Image (cartoon, rainbow, N blue to C red; front, top):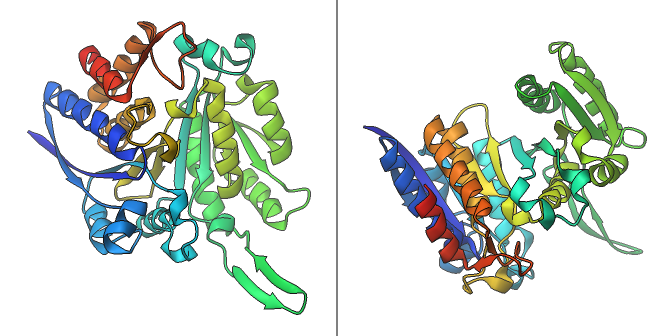
Length: 357
């Protein structure tokens, strides 16, 4: 029997609740499709700080390196906001991405017909939305040096450096072009080349990589225009390619096209080694422990893990089909319910998904 080693990182807030739902479903689809998942749960983020005073314990990192795939829920809590930067939950995630070389973040955004009324945009604007955000994840302003805070004669000054090398741009661009070849063969590269030197290099390198993929149509948009176009006419996009900072913002904006950020999965990949699969949403500490979370993004992240990370396509299909069927039946968690549907708790949604597998 095929076996896959999976690291579970429940993290903080609603993380443990949605992880429980995903684990039960993964156990069922793996058994149904003739393979075994070996789970190893580890600490990260605030949970790790509480236990070890380190947002990314060495044991967690080593276990992740030795796995076939990593499934993470969410990290973060405002009670850690006053800690030094290197001790905050988010630093653990950034360190994990860096240590594993997870440079390519892939976020599919597809409107589910059963949820078209849940979006704040008009149905005729979003009905054909099916796009992929490809975000560079280990470079740019989040990792650039120098950075810090210094004392000056005029008071304190803070600074960060947005920087990309040719190699970093070419690497993420290649991922985007390869994805585009299997979709509608269209890429929109997002930058701020009219004012940023780093964006000028970005645009030049995208054009250079495009020569290797002549079948793919490429256009460029400034980030402010892209943000507007995502609301005005989102169906114009197929693959949206951008750097770390702009991708962070635009992918969350794109998530709301679907009606809830609680619906979207993501994958973070390296050139080799295990991928990290996680929902786009945060830890939602305000509803943690109240059984109100929407587990669907975690379930769809599990499906991405099965498909991309483990090459278990039939099992991934089972999870995705279960989500579609449950939504068609009119079941909703509170973030998606407008009173006209059957509102379920997190655990109840898990039960319905389990029935549908």
